[in-house]
Amino acid sequence: MRIGYPCVNIGLGCTSARTFRLRSWSPERFRSTVRENLACLSSTLQFNIDHGLLFFRITSDLIPFASHPVNEIDWEVEFSGSFTEIGDLIRESRMRISMHPDQFTLINSPDGGVTARSIAELAYHAAVLDAMGLDTTAKIQIHAGGVYGDKASAMERFLDRYRDLPVAIRRRLVVENDDRLYTAAECCALNQACGIPVLFDTFHHECNSSGEEMPEALAICARTWGRSDGIPMVDYSSQKPGARKGAHTHAIDLAHFRAFLAASRPRDIDIMLEIKDKEKSALLARAEAAADPRLTA
Image 1 (cartoon, rainbow, N blue to C red):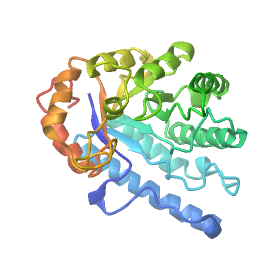
Image 2 (image 1 turned 30 degrees about the vertical axis):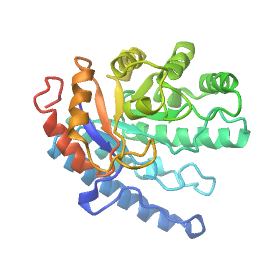
Image 3 (image 1 turned 120 degrees about the vertical axis):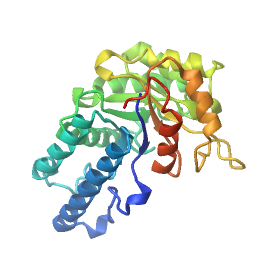
Image 4 (image 1 turned 90 degrees about the vertical axis):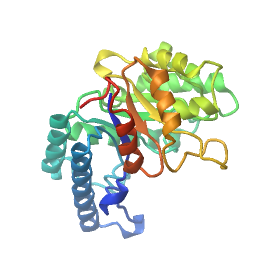
């Protein structure tokens, strides 16, 4: 079991998600931004290794405009040395990596333009993980998408589009239950039809389920992961007090997390904390789980 957090280390004073406006595009601006992003990513990963946080979600903004037609730079080749160094760091530490494109990545959209842009974005994410030389346990997570007035048709469209994706994308893609539209059970139905692993989001399940208790839903989702996928990934958070339903808490509720750990035993999982204060809560969570025999040293 590994514990981690997504995208940004608040305390380091750098970000691997620097970007700029399209109207400011230039090859020089692009190259300098990518260099800074990769350097910050290396620093973030080293911090995580030093503190035993061995699960990390790399920001989608690592390479600005990577899937945009304006970008004709072969960034995978140009920055291959940095990617190789980062990949070596990840493998040597046995760190687990994921990525999560934004909410506009919708492979089941009825709009052909949205679908084409979504596939280009997924190809970029797969290219980043490939450039680092990571195996297929490094995953790209998406939501099932919209309903568009007819959920059954939307799910069929997801399946059709998924089956047509390039292998480089499909071998890394996982689908996540969401807090409004697609439950864990519905995502598992997609798995049964096409084999895509289901990443279980505990908080989304609290907001939107098909009636299963959390341990049952987690077990069903875990069975969708094959040997080459690695152990199941889980997103964890809890409700922000006094906020709208589905708002993530700013800081970890250790009593809630403790109950989750107990309910998830003995299943082996990697836990991504989707909590606002990032590494601060991740360090508290790791300390809370220190006595759990599942935890990776």
